[in-house]
Image (tube, rainbow, N blue to C red; front, side, top):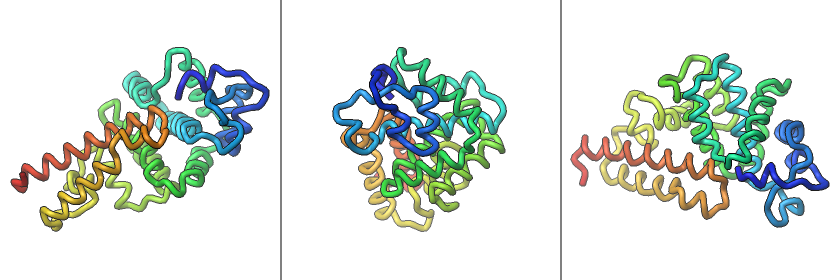
Amino acid sequence: MSAGLWGKIGGAGLGALLGGPLGALLGGVAGHFLVDREGALLGATPKDVVFTTGLVALAAKMAKSDGVVTPSEIEAFDRVVQVAPAARPGVARLFDLAKTTTAGFEAYAQQLASTFRDEPALLEDVLDGLFHIAKADGAIHEKEERYLRDVAAIFGLDEAGFLRVAARHVRLPDDPYLVLGLGREADDAALKAQYRRLVAENHPDRAVARGLPPEAVAIATHRLAALNAAWDRIAAERGIT
């Protein structure tokens, strides 16, 4: 999220532009701020606004569900939600307000699921970001796992889909294969083809080309690293060159 999101004052509310529970949340923090991009108020809400507001809101609700926010989780949040120094107070206010709102995390997750129903990869990006924050203290605790599973279900991921995302962050049985979304019975050619397809789909340059915010680009970078690590393990195990 750029500093411009919080730095432009105008006559219409960004919260009203976004709408829904996320719009109400953002309006409560910066109701008179506008997006710093040409034509933003004339069309649909920019994806970066929806993506980042939703990610911040769900991260805040996850912190509340766990009950403790560790310094490592704060550092991880700062790495995932990349903002200019001037924008940090606004993001901090958004995070703190989201923790205290009467709206549950389900409302925020459902709005994201509806907004990005035709772009499920963006929903996985949000879930990836939440995993990065949850694991920052060295473990994903029971309440955090339950929360992540609930968010994943709202996003439309089944158990296999959830495990595929989780495998990018925690050690699971056969995790390199889960990362690629294939089983150990797949042959070398199928694994290599799947790996190449996923690399092409998840390359950070693609996120940049689609006009997504720095948060999505950073998440894509981490995801690509997880794919490469999984492939390296499989290739070494099978002797694939």
